Image 1 (cartoon, rainbow, N blue to C red):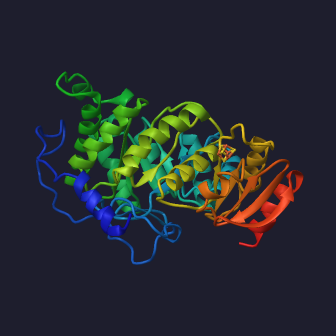
Image 2: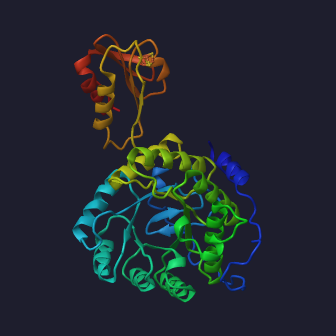
Image 3: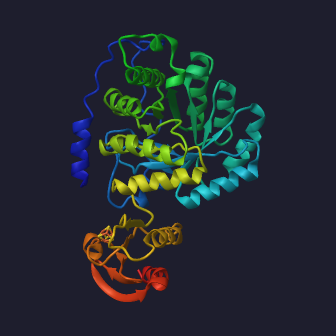
Length: 404
Ligand code: SF4
């Protein structure tokens, strides 16, 4: 897909902003009077270099999270959330380094209590990645986090104690020149919207989030990112589709919340987020897994790579095997995957069970092996380079990859 194609697709999928059918539940009626809080920086964002080919939504406003750009055509940024105790500075910094090594670009840290603010500040000071403060219920924690190094605040305006408290958080973010993610979840909808029987859950989620965005904008605060998630895949997909029509200028953080453990969580997330990304929706993503957050980053990169949106790691093209296969291909493929797990080169590496179909079906691979009876033919772009015994396949493949 070219940039022109992306533009066409975005135009096809993002309808003109409609006037809301109902005024935001608690928002003032005044029109916004101020320009967006921050202009797009002249400097290239940190994630620009890793986007050689594809661009995400061109229609959304540019928001900076530290040095990472979201929206307005920036590559879809990958994020995760720290899972170690919030008051353990060393553990959080160690996990940030693991995530950064895996390709994470933004991390979020929960601040469950005021006495975790010192640790949060220390983490922000030493972190190699921008740190987002995740705050529920206590507006004062969000305000302090903004003052103490947060690169972004993540709040649900519905649970911080009312609009006065929300206003105070907006003011703190404005002073700190950081954005706010408005995060709405199915489990914490405003009671008035939740009671509506004329709206689907997706419409309720989108309405709630869009109303908050308009409220923030009426306060002259435009540095906003939105998420509105459910654990049900199609509810989430439909919510973001509605949001992309209702607030087309606002960058969207996409994800399936509470998606589950590794296997189910990856499938649920990939199916839902794949639909959205293919429709040009989504400026940053998190794949939420009940697992090590490093797995979330691997899943994000694999998804973006599969959609040909962003590439960073090798892609393994391996066949499912059949009666023609005469080697232990599953073991070889797993070892190749393991050996390449830290290589940051977007190569296509084929591991095929036979020479009958192998080189032909993986002709676009940069390098590969097509196995025979206890042997393998190493090939590049469909051309055979050399033949080796089965026990030498892995070494020969790695040897050739090292030359690329
Ligand atoms: S590449 Fe060969 S062994 Fe693998 S599935 Fe195809 S025909 Fe079977």
